Structure formats: structure tokens, C-alpha cells
Amino acid sequence: MSLHKPNISFEFFPTQTDQGKEKLLTTFDELNTLAPKYFSVTYGAGGSTRTRTLDIVDSLCERSDTPIAPHLSCIGDSKAQIAELLDRYKAQGIQRLVALRGDLPSGQVGMGELPFALDLVKFIRDYSGDHFQIEVAAYPEMHPQARSFEFDISNLVNKFNAGANTAITQFFYNADSYLYLRDAVEKKGIDTEAHPLVAGIMPIINASNLIRFADSCGADIPRYIRRQLADYGDDSKAIRQFGFEVVLQLCERLIKEGVPAIHFYSMNKVQPNKRLVEALGL
Ligand code: FAD
Image (tube, rainbow, N blue to C red; front, side, top):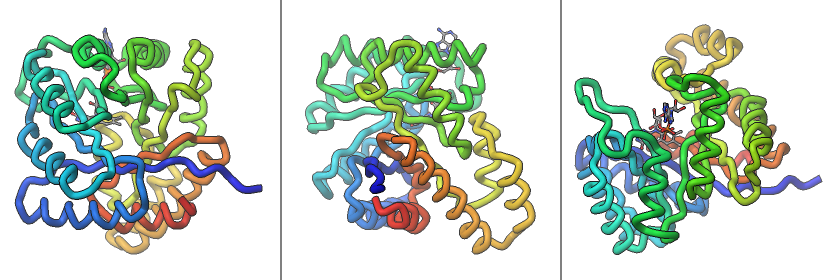
């Protein structure tokens, strides 16, 4: 039986230095040979990476015809600042955005005029009509600040109903959590063929960073993974090999279950992502 082939996309974060940017452009060229549907570029909440995000978006747009999807996070920004970005992206020919609330950098207070991603989705639709394809965030293991799982699922449904086209999940290593979320939004009336739930996949490259990041964003690292990462200690080659096998199995299961697309949290790296895409035959 031949399995369907989900689309792939890659996420980048803006780099701090010119040297880092040069490296990112080379990474882009290499990942671009895998024919992704688009690349996305993160945006620090409160505008903390505005200049660097715009700079990377400009450079990637100039470099190839592969679509670029800037992230836009609304917390702490004014409507005027968001409108300015929407005008700029529209003029540049950008047609896809990832619309998020974001997390305020420590010390910054004030939620701004658009406190939640739902407000941002509504604002984009009011301001730019149907110009942009809007992606939003989804949480198979619940957003860490959500008042309940049920509330968080309804929040995702509300984002779809307000005009979001697609959702990309937070990373996860338990396929059942993704399948549960997909069933849950369908039960609330969302047609997941029209509004696909894209699996956000984080390759395992470095144990301590992964665990710190997972703890902060509420993603679960199952015990069998945590324990083995701990056992490998500083053996980065063993960690990468184990991580590759775990994530490959996860993606294979998701593909069997009909996942429409896979969005790789690339960590601005070529090899771990390319290896997975090639092993999956995508
Ligand atoms: P929302 O959908 O607004 O939800 C945030 C929380 O508020 C949830 O707990 C929700 O249940 C709750 N909530 C919603 N409405 C209400 C309400 N009316 N009253 C009370 N609670 C409510 N962050 C960045 O800063 N920049 C990025 O580029 C970025 N990219 C990301 C890409 C993806 C694919 C994902 C999954 C996350 C990304 N993040 C990024 C992180 C994201 O911004 C954080 O997870 C953030 O805490 C929540 O954003 P959201 O869009 O899910 O917010």
C-alpha cells in the first residue's frame, strides 16, 4: 500500500549576526532543494525581533520563489503596528502568515490592543480581507496557560471560525495527542479537510535544550525518551541517532493516520531535517 505524501514546510528564527544570517541563507538553499511548500520566519512578541524578522523575510523572498510566511505575534503590539506590517507584506507579494499571540519578553508589561491570537485573526480579516492564508497555533497537549483543555480546544475552533485557514501544532512526541486533538475539533464542527491540522515536528538534536524548551511551552517528552536522552549524556552522536529514529517513527505513524502536512521546527539546521524528509520519502 502506498502512503499519501504530506506537504512539508520549515520554520526559521531570525539570526542575531550577519555571519548567522549568511549561514541561514545557505541552510535555506539546501532545505529549498527538498521542495517545501513554504518557509516561515518567527517574530518575537512585542516586536522584539521586528527588524531582524523583516530583514530575513526580505532576503528569503529575493532568493527564491518558494513562498515565505512571516509569523506575526500580537501581544504588546498596537493595531497600527500590525497594520503597517500587513501593508508591507501585502505589497511584497506575501500571501501566507502565521498569526500568534506570542509571549511577552520578561519585564515587558501590557497586552496591547490585540491580547489574543483570536483578536489578531479577526483584525487581519477586517483589515486585509481574504488576501492572506492564515495559519494559527494549536496545542495537542494543551497550551500551558489555558484554563482547561476544553477551553483551549474551543479557542482553536474560534480561531478557525474567525477566519484562520490552517493550524500548526506545537511539537509533540505522542501521536495520540495529535489524533485526539484532530477528533476533538472535528466534533466541534470543524472540517479538517478544509482546515487542516498540520503536525509541528521538532527534530531531536540536543537533549538539554529540548527539555528546557518543552518544559517552558508545555510539550510532553515521554519518559522513555527523557530517560534515554539522560543515559546518552554528552554523546551527541548517540542522541542525534536516537532522536532521528524516534521522530521518524512518529512521522511514519502520523502519515499512516493521514496527516495533511508536516511543519519542521528546523532550528535553522539542515541535516536533522533533511535526513528525516529523505527517510520519509517526502
Ligand atoms: P492564543 O490562541 O491567544 O492562546 C493563548 C492562551 O490564551 C491559551 O492558553 C488560550 O487557551 C488562552 N486564551 C485564549 N483566549 C482567551 C481569553 N479570551 N481569555 C483567557 N484566556 C484565553 N511565539 C512568538 O512569540 N513568536 C513566534 O513566531 C511564534 N511562533 C509559533 C509558531 C507555532 C506553530 C506555535 C505552536 C507557537 C509559536 N509561538 C511563537 C509561541 C506562541 O506565541 C505561544 O505559545 C503563546 O503563548 C500562545 O500563542 P497562541 O497564538 O497560541 O495564543
